[in-house]
View 1: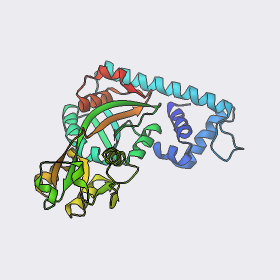
View 2: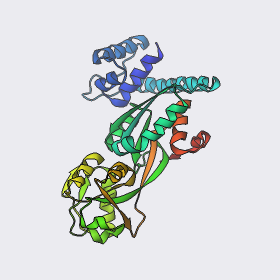
View 3: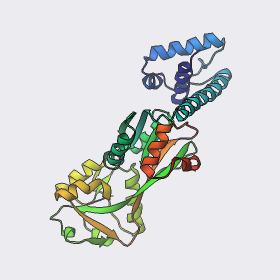
View 4: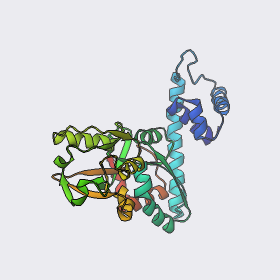
Length: 303
């Protein structure tokens, strides 16, 4: 029985899907099924309850899963400790990030990080917010980057930074002549918004509600790039994170107007699954993003 067998088994249990476990381990579904049967033969027990339509562990399977997780944790800790003893900062970091962070916040940080630690390979997946959480909970990635982080018992949340929310308009829009406006100025404007399940959309809906404004988007999109394109053709105005429109402001294709009368911020955070062993490379990457020395993260915020 090898450590790889235990990882495949753990991935299968946590995802309750042979296809997902296969994808995570670069195997076929048939190979995952064979691994499960091999484990049952090795331990002379039934691991899954075949009488149930849904994936369900037997009592023996539950005990095996708990033991497998403990052994995997110890193995990951051993690898991390050995790397630290050798003062090695290398390996892979797999990130899952919402579009706005992945495209606009991460690039300069990654560039500086890789210049300092060239032996590390950083891979970024650009995902919708709900899928970032799914990636983390299913152990598909190492770290996630989200806005307005959700409090979950299984997650560690590390504050990253705060973005200012600003109004963007077409350069010839009536509001473009102002440096700042109150939310009341948006009455009568066509608003471009994010899809309703996106955290920034929920935040802007709450802002409109707090200021007693009945503002319903005439268009809804699932990513920041499409929202900006709609504003560029003067289809409406939008409230977006300031960091995501720097290029368009410099090029003059969009005008930015600050919002007055409130503290309109978008908190960003790094998330990872609670109890996950962070390699030296992961800890250094977190340090690079936050600017806080790595040891301080031993007591990151837990919700």
